[in-house]
Amino acid sequence: MTLRELIAEIKKLNSAEQHRLKEFFINSIASFSASEPIFQEVTERKNKDGYTCIHCGSKQVVRFGRYMVKLGLKEVERQRYRCKDCQKTFSDVTSTPLYRTHKPDKWLDFIKCMLEGYSLRKSADLIGNVHFVTLFYWRRKVLSALNQRDFETFTGIVEMDETYFLYSEKGTKDIKERKPRKRGGSSKIRGISHEQVCVLIARDRQKSTYSGVLGRGRIVKTQLDKAIGSKLSSDNTLCTDVWRAFSAYAKSKGLEHYRFKSDGTERVKGLYHIQNVNNYHSRLKGWMQRFNGVVTKYLKNYLSWFQFLDIINHRNDDATVIRMIVESCLFSTYATYDNLRLSRFTN
Image (cartoon, rainbow, N blue to C red; front, side):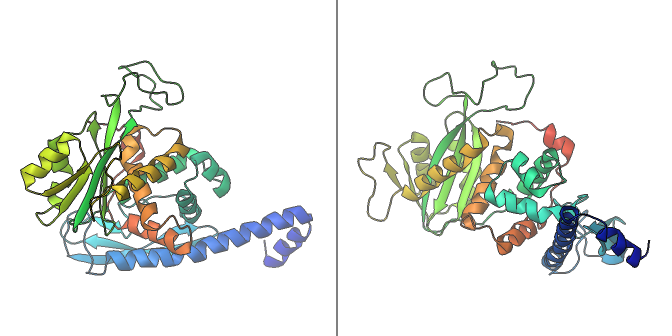
């Protein structure tokens, strides 16, 4: 069909159909135009120190032809590389969340929905032409990559406190330890027990933050050392509540330590307090409520998600969308549909 014949057919459409066709072309062209700078930035950031094989780490890498990727209505070329040592080929998005994605033109809208914290079903409705189950795996792949973001050491005063989430196996069909709870439910044991999962938050005054799942039940000293021992030095001062595991850990490491009771009778001792970390807890719990309970095996990914949102001050603009995609592509992730679906929480 020639262009003239195509225009003649378009003229036969009613006004509503012509409007839908116009929106289709606008969205397709916009997706292509916005995606290209992101791929270029991923390429530049990953190859700033030269080409490196993602399979064996060798620097003996050469360009090895190009391949085609469909973005909306257009097809674009992408660079392929080959390692001279292991003879394997790869691209700039191999082992990233974008690897083998069938609808790369949908990722911009998907990341915008993630920044807003929308549910999977609402995101699928807003994006269009993509199933919410597909978005489920996209989300897990992005978060498994962002979960690798880290920093070297804390600086100065470090506030540290734990919070607890109810242990959840939401979506599991054959729960063996107990009867399934309806809509999240509540713990049958009063206080902190094995039915709850401990999340440690440690945060210095420069807002360097560690948030991680330590295990079920009360926190113990060995868990603290394993989680953040490498990030603390004798120059740090710890501010915690009065739970004995914190005191034992600070004493074993020779750290200056200030303790604050949960009843709030003494909240501040000069420069020392735990109000920043408690505020972080409050915001984290409020944000998590929208998901109506998070399955425990994915909890660490949600902690990374919130931590990223906290860093960008919950902004949702073009710059933060690009930043989230690019930073997730800087880390290798081998999360597949099967290992995500079949994964289990280990205490």
